Image (cartoon, rainbow, N blue to C red; front, side):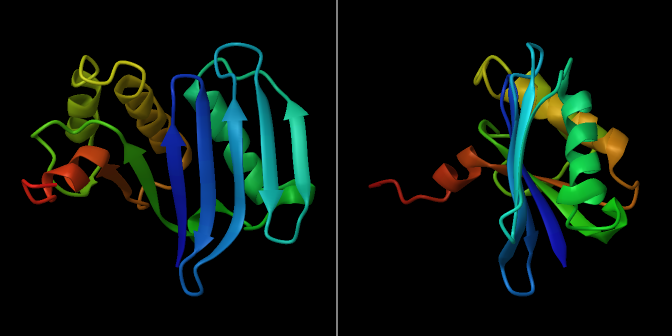
Length: 159
């Protein structure tokens, strides 16, 4: 089972592609300076490294470059996105709405965006990244939101 893990920021999209059977990282990287001038850094499990300047107008552009890099050319580690079983998104703020890992439906993504006032630098970019991801991954691949705040809600009061 292969999982794509994503951590989106206001101008970045960090990722790791993980083979869960042996918990190995197939590739990892960062699409940086989204909305500015843009660049990607990408490293494969066997040490191949790509560093390239490329414009990212938005998170969709970054996801498209991420997909192309993972699946085609000299830095590919999978043949298609059909090999991915799920996409996990790290989300900073779930407020009291989200107390556990949640499938990222359109309604969930909108709720994450609506929480932008609680984490202005994080939540809206997370939502943008999830909407962008939905445009470039196969329809049957679930997106899952993992909330930092859900972890904190499980801590005992004394902690």
